[in-house]
Image 1: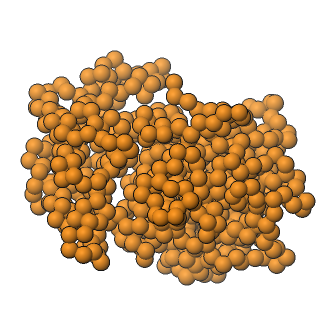
Image 2: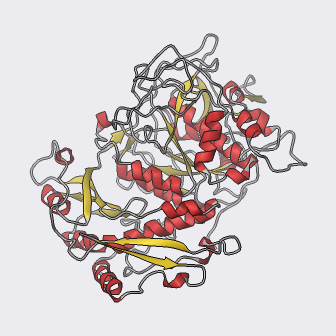
Image 3: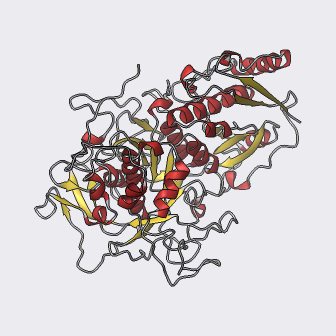
Length: 587
């Protein structure tokens, strides 16, 4: 049994949206007592201000646009009933301790029973309002409900990390502790948090007449736009004066070599002569393996991948890359990027992935504190998957993460995977989620790449049609650390950045779409070049659009921009270069 308190607030009395009943005050005091029993040390706990007593977080004034919204809004806080401690709780997933000796600890995720209701975000038209609402609702729910459990973990002396993007806690403990936590009434589930290695790219699959190249700046490449970038219509959008200016792309990957000539001026933390990594970079690797070139908790952007090679640097360059000397390898050279490392030498965990999503929702300073949702990303590129075969055993482990970020008006773009050509090979989260914008791979002649994973989705039993769209992913020219280029990058990891860059171009051209995730995705689907296949999968014909091979077809951002209701731009630049950059600092 639980008690649900719904407290009404409006723009005249938003400061009183909680604490209006004696029973509520009693319940809040119980949580305060629990929260005050522990302290946060360094970056161990990522929940902002969690070391302070639990309190009602007042809605900031800027969450409401009172000139446009005079009606009352409902903000709900779901609280656990007083008898929450122990009852018939969640069963313990046996895979958590598989292969572990008796008493040996493992990492697992404790997902709380109560999760924030974010449906109210739909009432806000502006992305900034959506983001602020979602951030405050998520953080308030975590502060109210996690206290007693965090106090128990502090008393047990075990490592833990608290999250608010999903109301959960990463814990490293033994089986006895895991069983105890699973039995609690305030716990919904105790899930594995395995280490997951980045799926290697497929063997290079070249079209006739196309060969890989490796150079610093080659004459053939100078002053040209790469064929894959031209294929999806990006130069046509640039010619209208829209290069992604004003849009921020979050790159969740192996890190990034931000000082590469094709990336440096596009990094949000670079101001021309000064640099600040606060709010622009986060490292979710706190326990890097021996020999990792970036170490743990890197304070500056760093790409630790030396096998792909430099996967994060490569994918970032496909979104924004342009060195100003003719190496135009990115979709949106006027956009800025921020980064988060979510893999240790290619090995990720659900907790690391979640931490990066949380950073993009509300970036923090170098101590992981003072979160600022006003500096959130507009679109997040995810050129990775979390495969079940390598330990990501819960298909829904990142589902709420993706959905909650989407509620804040952020587009989540995900590579479909390289498991083709068989049907239903889009099998890894987060690529198969409904809320993810999933991308397959094509050649520059619009043929499907043989490795591109196909739908429909069977991993969660939904039979959902995926991918959503396709984009070039064969023999792409990308940036490599420290300052070179490579023409042999293949995989849906390269296709996804085309779509992330397309979102940046579209939103710079049609700002009324900013934060309108569903409308944006629908427009990009509707304007894709329709492509069909002879392959039928799971009851879906390959000869109609959409289909389980190409989705709605190959990306065409020029058609999408043409279809959008554009604002007047009488002084559009005809031959654009990238937009200016500036250092983002707290104020």
